[in-house]
Image 1 (tube, rainbow, N blue to C red):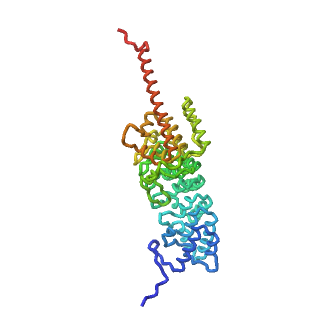
Image 2: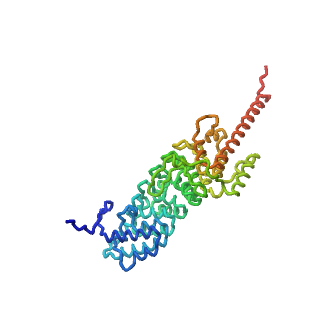
Image 3: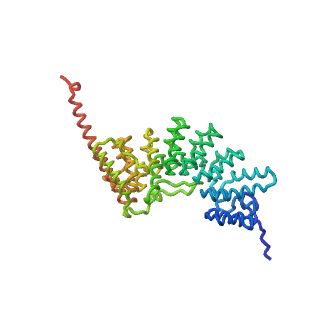
Length: 447
């Protein structure tokens, strides 16, 4: 005879018992939140069948819902309306507790729970990019007097401040930074100098988000709170794959047009996503014979004008980065005094020029090319570009060029030829100068 199944399930993560009714109600609420169905959410929270308190307050036992509470799931959506609806339900469920100690404990637990990636409610609020959601969560941190939540790290050792830096909203970063100053004034520098498990710094997280004001806010904070000597070390730091802060900024420009999104570095989302292989990142399997991609016509006109000016001997500092690449511009402003960054190679041997090629944006390559010529000698740039047609074996740059559209490859070839002509002219000028110097009277040898 088959025994009846108990109406209980035990969570291996949280060690609590949950009735089938609670689990069903929890899944219904979380499903409505994650799908953005506000009407279904309101029905699930305040309909004729009132949900059990645990369904509103406790984390889901299902990996389908990433082990999150309804409030965590709502914060992750970035929808202030959804979050407010769930927050009211949470406050109501907590308010029904008779003992004040229980109410305090439940409020604290809402901030302490972590999802499958180790992210807390505060991290999810920061990553969402919603200032309203983040300010509401920060207010709860103050109410329960739990400032230590500002110092939490997820399973990939990413801090709350790093999540805020990667949120594409400068105001989000400012909220967390201001709260850190209020609670841990002496710890702000250490938070800015921290690295995640993949050795990515807060500058890298900000660069990868691709937001102009966000990157500038992080950059200004680093210059304000970090000692110059330590800031230089932060700028020079590379991640676990040898990728520099500047390379991350270059790679981020691929996300800001309709260009094919072939990323040049591995992607790390909140909670430590799966890494991509080098072949996947470089677009292995893609064809260089696909549809040509180039920038909008007006962008090409601007590029052509700058190239023409450079060819006529105009000062190179007249080359202005496109406003759409302000993150890249801010990165240059930080690293221009750290020449090693401009000459660095990552774990796959790719330089800043290789990363620029893999964005598939000719304008990005031009920006990197002309900006680099401000600080690096032409023969060094030629070596970094790594195009050697006399050698039968392909260089890393040539391999990368095989994966991008013809327009990108043509732009690189054009710059390579310009660089070679410039080097030739410089060599001739040097030869002439040395001959002139040999005939200066003061240097003549009189027998």
